[in-house]
Length: 169
Image (cartoon, rainbow, N blue to C red; front, top):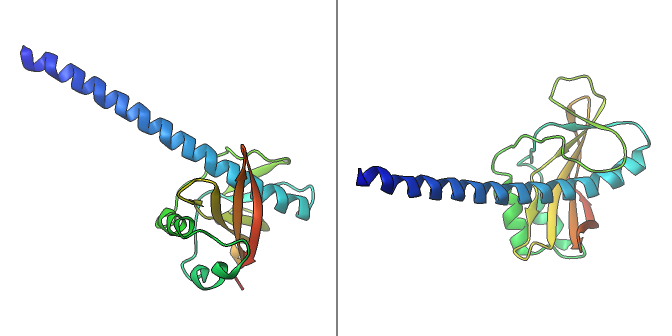
């Protein structure tokens, strides 16, 4: 009898821990979509009023020369941002409809009818959380295209692009 009552607090503690972790994931998730939205907002303005098609998962092509090129850009990228970016992109992750920028968009899987597609990497953050790095690939008919690294700085509750560098062909 005593062992069953002792396991109830353990289950409760595990439930609380799970809820706490879910909150952390949700907060990080919201931050990622704020970064994505800041970058896409600028790209969508350049391309015009058509709906933006976004690949439905994150991906960073391992051949992109991030270490040799972006470090020379101004402003400089913090080492912790780069390390977090590389760690975050070790695996591809699904994207959801959580973007918040002006204009319409859709998520699409490779093979879906789409002429121009934006592919996004996972986001890397500085240790302080005020700098972010994301890779955006402009694909045409799902073929490889141009890739860009965007460096963002947090300004209050918003993210601003402060650096951009082409890293694809």
